[in-house]
Image (cartoon, rainbow, N blue to C red; front, side, top):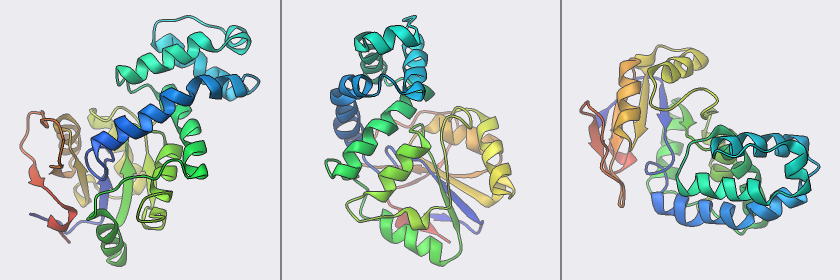
Length: 237
């Protein structure tokens, strides 16, 4: 159990609010299946092309905008390679968010959240706690995710979103930036994640931490001890 008397709660997504299997078996698979068609359909979209150039570079392929516009095959293969390797590439995450928008808005994708998540979000909001999300998934993807869950639209309970444009999730400076953006001292923020190295970085920045222990999660790793919780019901505010 975590007794928290601060003012804000920062949440990870994968392995914390939603299952790892949903992210990999549903979201990633949808993106892999649709990336080639998406790039072909948007071959005249400058933003999409620049994202494709960047992610291809991360995969070790040097492609120009004109080359991708003429034939997006190599860029789509690079995107799939990065997803298979679970590379936290900012350009890839942005492209995934665009692809997932189609799936969420069409109803093909409905986001999974653990049963304890919706009532906890409502409870914290009612108590005046500032609840925000920090995920490697793009901010657009986060908003789509929480706007289309099996429990309905949960975005009204969320006051902000952060992704890797803020900084890597395993670096102390990222959490310092988030605290500064919220406008409160780090010690007034509780960060909940299933990844020990992320929790270590948040603790180093001065935040309170809790380790999400969910079915199917990998060993947490990290160097420091963080209070384990199996449900958000164990967070007492």
